[in-house]
Amino acid sequence: MKIRPALVLVSLVIVASWFLLLSCGDREEDMKIYWEKVDLGPGHSDDHILCIAKRGNLMMLGTYGKGLLISHDNGVSWLNKTKKDGLSWNYIHNIDFTGDRIVLATMGDGINISSDGGKKWKRYGYNFFGPVYTYCTGAYVDSHRALISSADGLMFFRDDKDWRVLDESLGISSQYIYCMHTDGERIFLGSMRGLSLSFDSGKSWKIVAPDNSYTEQSLPRTKMLSIAVDGDTIYAGTPRGLSKSTDAGESWTQVGAAMLPSDYIISVAVTSKGELWAGTYKGLAHSPDGGETWQLFGPESGLPSRGINCIHVDNDGAVYVGTNSGLYKSTTEKPEIPKPEESNIPVFDKVEEPEHRWMIRPVSAEYNNQLDQCYLYAQTMGG
Image 1 (spheres, rainbow, N blue to C red):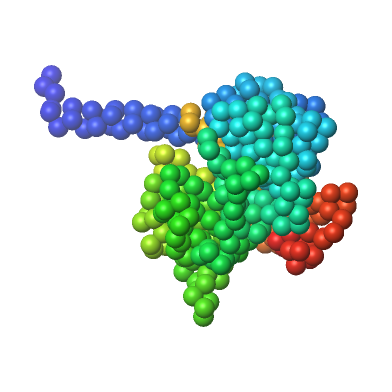
Image 2 (cartoon, helix red, strand yellow):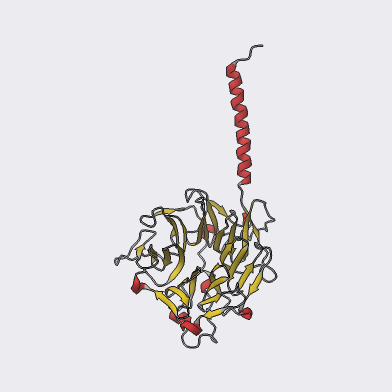
């Protein structure tokens, strides 16, 4: 029997297409992301996790009222450091460390610094600064200095005799700073008035509005809550959505419009491959292509439905998410997922919640008997 070449060609195309569909299906299945809750030890399962710092197997978490959590074995076991262990305050907004030097930015009592890996702590809070520079939002530390962002400006801190503060009089758009990123000589500050950028270690500044909205005085209208930087690509999270610049802040476009769980972007992270993560009050979103397309994560994936406070992407690709009910880690294995709470209100119609971290008076009377912090910051701490 003579076999027609055209028939053979068609058959090969069909078989190849079939295998291609199967392989694509396998890849799609492999790419599914779920979330498993990290065991933080007794009494810490539902801690409010405000920040995550991790290098190698060493991991640190700042909590709302539960102090500092430290793991030396990649999250398998945890130590808890609180006021009983030498901290001055258990509300930790941000963390950075290098070697044995750790800097904690607290919500109401300045900074705590350890030079021995967390065994002993030195307090620079109300006892040192008085009522200002005590509400801190960001921390960066290297071998010779620390940069601390606060509600009163950016602090360059070497020791108790060598420190200075940069505020609006020295070039930044607002001294009320929400977020900070620094690498080399570049410093990025997200504040009540948009973004302030410096490319010379803070000697000069450029002020931009990531949403391209300015006042008559040429100041940004919108506050900037979160930032992620990858080379010259900058992502800025605001209450009005997520903006992106690919030219170090010269021009901006909005990404994720009408595709995110909420326009109120609390946290944002970007990987070296350009993958983007955005955290909101109403869930987590992931973009594999820099903001063009998005996948949303909620209770059906293992995450809580609300309260994504911080995101950390590890060097091995693992993603950690700090929430109002504990720490979660990405996984490809589907965990046992609790039944979500039933609600008749569509998630996109729910009113935005106030962020929990602003709601409690940050400094107790025993440490602040002269000037009330809530009065100092216009009755509320940012809200």
